[in-house]
Length: 216
Image (tube, rainbow, N blue to C red; front, side, top):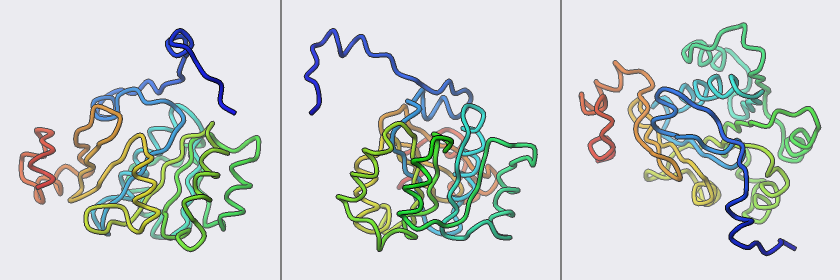
């Protein structure tokens, strides 16, 4: 049973935070190193590229496990890594192909498993995940930052479980037209993925970090 805190207990807490810089600091702030995020968008909008760029950046702070459940570690994934600018010298970013949900749970439970985990994507586990199962998974791995990827359905993550995960997420990033629109418990803003393509899609407003113009 959770212990009841007084306000001194609340204010005396110390949180482990990422020390971001650049566009990541502008949009994400200084988030805790644990929690739940989601990145979602339609096909060919830059979702995987942004997620890999983020995974590469996060690997500067901690080891990162990238579960490429949908496409595996195949030619298309290798190409995506190159587009994201990930160097072959990065030994802290650790991609693996699909694991069924039970095997994924066991992998995350091992002592040496990285504390930052990308799961690409929810569709690969849609038939295995219920809300109750997800809540148990989240509670079991509360010492980690877990970042789910999802396809998009009517401007929201795909399926009931995708929408449920977004509701619980500290940070969510909707990817559209090679730009990531950041929301949640953070400063928010826009991350251009490929600036040239983003300007072609959205116009020069994208460079002004104008969320309203991008989302309309």
